[in-house]
Length: 210
Image (cartoon, rainbow, N blue to C red; front, side, top):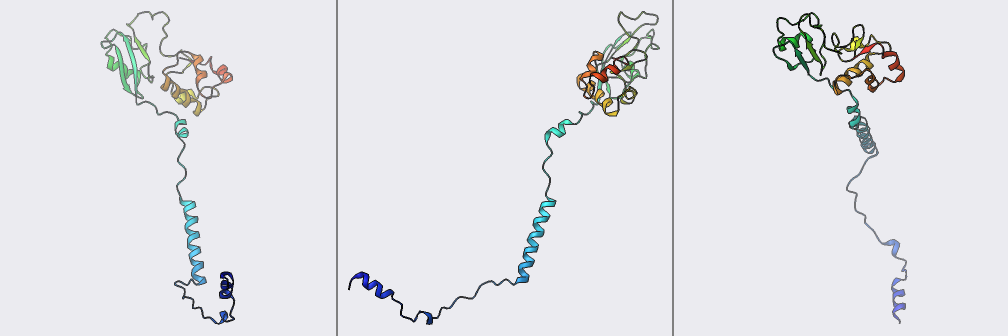
């Protein structure tokens, strides 16, 4: 008998296969339907809770940078003329001309009536103290700004809102611009302020001074 025939003979069904007893091992773990439903509910609850309670995405840096820069805590002004201590004076934000004069110590013959001592100081401002009866220097103004006009360099946000078309946001932008870039050198620089375009500038240019 050939090898092939021998293999076929060994593999030939004998009819006794169905009578062979196969013992299956008992399951180690049995999950009841109720237990399965409870487990699924717990998992779904945890997933939903994680979705709603997870922290949101970090705030983009550009949003934080878009906020207005905080106002400096101090201002630096120059006091010149008839004073014992001429030069730069550093004062807290919100200081007035009287505070700068106190630090500079005006001479007895200084004309203090010509100065508005209640005026708020702006960073970079210069105060020229003259002698009583002295003529103002060529090109000098009687004080910061022009009488009858709103000063871009010294007016408070509340004073700036008295201008037509200038609300609280625009007034705050004007103050933030001069604090970040120094006093306005000309009225035309008002157009560098965010929110002030050519049309609004035309309405304001004759009402403001530097």
